[in-house]
Image (cartoon, rainbow, N blue to C red; front, side, top):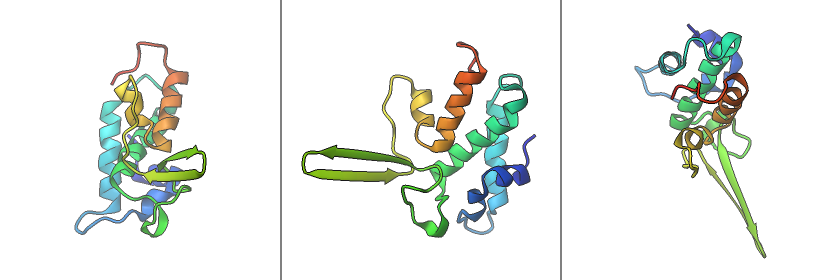
Length: 135
């Protein structure tokens, strides 16, 4: 079982999320870790399973809470997906924590919304042969 301490050691930015009492940062993160632990196969990632659990928990938590310092979301905020578009004469950037990514595979589209999810998808591609992903 992955602990809050190991999660925060891996992703210290989650230690500063804003929660409303009586909820604690530790309880929010531990629930996300427990859910991720139940979600993932016990054998799929081998020795990297704890990292996979942390990435899924970080992804889900980043979609619900602002993980940036000071509550300001910027392009450098860990876990935030950004979109940059340009055409003749203009450039625009949109930063959104929970923007939906469109794609043929809803699983991959969901996890593409944060940098944590993208790293998890990379682990899925490297760690598992096709057809072994349980989702």
